[in-house]
Length: 360
Ligand code: KG4
Ligand code: ZN
Image (tube, rainbow, N blue to C red):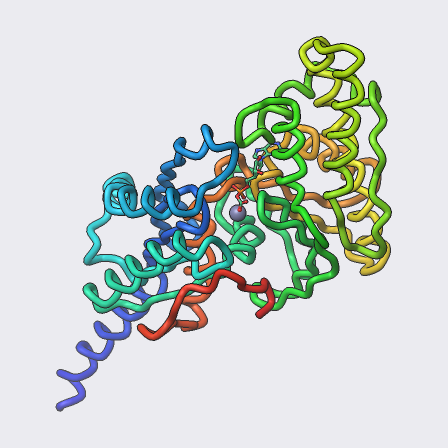
């Protein structure tokens, strides 16, 4: 008799749990460098991804950490409000808050970390910490128009302003570093070369723009010969500097007269280095699925070369939509979702981590 009353209640409870488990809403926060971003994901689908890019750094030729954290403080509340509004979701319906714990600038990370901790505490929902570099790779698991997602194992290459790494991705949270930069990141190679040419920060997108109109073989630059799957870009930057100094001594208008060719040659050399290392990684691991991530994956040259590699080398390549190349919170959200499913939650004792290795 009692079963007659209990059974419907039990079924209703189980149904509610099933709906909750399959309808995960993550609010994600990214504040590791100079972009303040918030996103809302429904499972693997992105509902909103708001990014406030800090223009203030342009006049200084690079990110000024103190100014970045102040700007995050100003931006974070309106950016989160916008992300919730665009997703058309009330914060009471959120399942968890995910945030970038590191790596990044400590002052910047502290803003996002403190905000996420307070909000999770206030809403009494789980808190999820995310490694920014894992997020650049796992961004490929956000639903996208192509419907293409890599399968395990695959090779991930993170190319950004702070990092250059090749990792073997064995599963969502099992990544082995195969190689990395010993000095400058590839984004720095772009940005510092641009600075030598008198272009504003960040110079990567500008080099890309001018390169499209130039001859990539006009000026040969040396490729560094660092071994295995590691990278080195500081020597490259110096060779660009010496080359420009030499040429402008002979002709003060050298840069303006040859900007497109110089940019095309710089970009060509950098892309050759990246491609050579990827070829080595494929040969070493026998894995021929390649997924790139990080700001430099927005580069039109690298995108083209990787698209062509499908035919040329028989690789399967995964290039993120532009929105997920540079820093954004949607990529933090997908890691939040994947960790939520595994119940990998953080406690209120968690602190930001400026140096945070991808496989830690
Ligand atoms: O991932 P990201 O937004 O921030 C970091 O975590 O560093 O990457 C920013 C970097 C900058 O160095 C910027 O110049 C570079 O990505 N970048 C590009 C392009 N778009 C952004 N580099 C070359 N070509 C581009 N189209
Ligand atoms: Zn990044």
